[in-house]
Image (cartoon, rainbow, N blue to C red; front, side, top):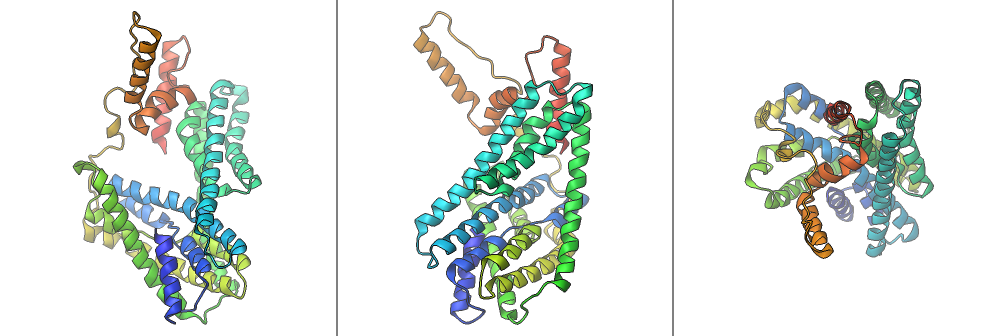
Length: 402
């Protein structure tokens, strides 16, 4: 929603001669890339000050999914621009977006589930194969990326969903030593990547060619993304609260904090840099300059004032008694299967179907009762109960580790 609102406002601003005028499709491309949030600084401050875990989860989840959505929308608009410069074919926009996003997500999820089954049954957790186990675990996301790119999809979206699936399922199938190694390895790689991108952005300001002659475009873009951010957060929170029970409503102070946490960072910068090559007539240079200025300003201003904002909204140390797993209270294992032995095959089938519907009423129950037992070694078929219990507890610890 924020990307569309931003694109429309930028286009209207150009029509009213408030800023440099871009074609409508290029305005939507700018709205797509500038709507990708990257609140690394805000999340680190949240964690340091002890902010409510639900607010932390909202900001983190939004930033992760926004990256995937921004890439898909940007690539969709880029394809529409090359095939239909007028941007009038709305059906093509929807089809292209679904093709890119759903296709990339399916490729990533498929590779993730494949890796979970491989590590469950391949028996790589013995001492002399642990190096191979770690290598395969690291290479599977890269395979997902290459597969998506080979299918003309988004490799970044694919690798994102591969990581989600592998963390939830494949990770618990690793040996204890391999779990420690891959956790430390990916933590190191992520820290290096974050440090590199900020260093690169710093050098870029001085070394790259920018178009600073259109300051009106930069100033009004900042105003428009603030308006789009507020419209997106408050409207989505309103819709979510309509279907949530009273004790799980998103409070207004969390909505304000979420609205304030819209930093722009690495993803917006990377897509803007790509726009320099995708757009002609200097339009990509204008978008790239505006994006660089917005990234620097949001990181410095929002990142520097986050602590004051949290204290003003009184969300520091709020709600630590809540548990992320409160929805899993009760039976944490399999749902026991009941079948009337004296009944007919039709009655048995209906009983099993009814049990499946009850046990899969939500995704969390479906995951706990069916997906996790199938894709992980938890509650496996080993004869040794102690070994099963050890593997099960190790798997649950892995789920909470990150």
